Length: 380
Ligand code: CAA
Image (cartoon, rainbow, N blue to C red):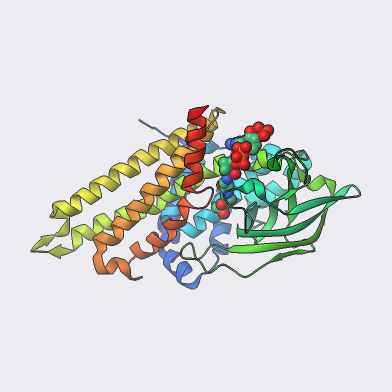
């Protein structure tokens, strides 16, 4: 059985109180208006949720990966759009802490954890390289002691809101393996030559910002390099291992909201002279979803515990992500089914959960990529 420690419990309760108080009430309005949750993100920063697994020296809570997973689930249960923005902020802050120089950490991480930067971005994907991330084409050419970046990025969460973006670019065209020639750079929001395009008109997570970016001769100093030249792909994949635990938690949060609403609706709605909760067809659906979410939660906690113990957790993170996100999609599908006609209209939250959860098997590595990673680890 999993018993949270005192600090894990505190983070979870803080996130739960905030989510069930203000977030749940405003989630449907944020979705309908596709309004970026800037005020909510500021409040989350005040609550210490923007650097949950970041050292206190940089304004973080230093509460670990398990606490981060617990908080992500709670916030996503309130508002999935707010949760993904918070998740990416945490991932960027952690990645800078892990791979950055002291100066980089001091310059950027407290800005994220304090909320002075409302968001931070992870700019890896490009129009022709999502799953095959190593095929990216953005270039970083040496220019004196610094670099000049050119190219474009696609589907960048908070790309137009970020105070700092980790941008991956090719520093070497002729590397033996394409992934070897990639480096990571810290680019500041508002940098000359960095332009955000039109917001994507998304199916779900409509309150989060997703934009394409173009980089036209964006000049950065040598001090903007994160890690060493050529280390970029390894940095990206290792950050994604952690990010995948966050997205698995987000999916469980969305699905938990869907399950709670399904349970309530099943008790309230009557057909054939009794609440539909009395019908075996509905009970079996509820039982399957409850069981699947419990199993998903354990896989997520296991992956987070491995990460926290500094054990290899690539396989565990991919298992948690593929299982949790697919089961969460099932849970939200079932919620719509149980709500019947009401599940198909925006008056009930089941409709929003169904749209919000869909992307969780796509971003932060598709289900297909997770299975590729799991099989490769198994075959080693
Ligand atoms: N951690 C650290 N290093 C790793 C690693 C890991 N988990 N996995 C692989 N590496 C290293 C390898 O050891 C290798 O280095 P060497 O050559 O020195 O041995 C190097 O990285 C390249 O690895 P691969 O040969 O495995 O690379 P690949 O080209 O076969 O790709 C892949 C593997 C798993 C498919 C990878 O491309 C991948 O994960 N793709 C999905 C990308 C993704 O998740 N994108 C999400 C975008 S961000 C997002 O969605 C955020 C958001 O908005 C919410």
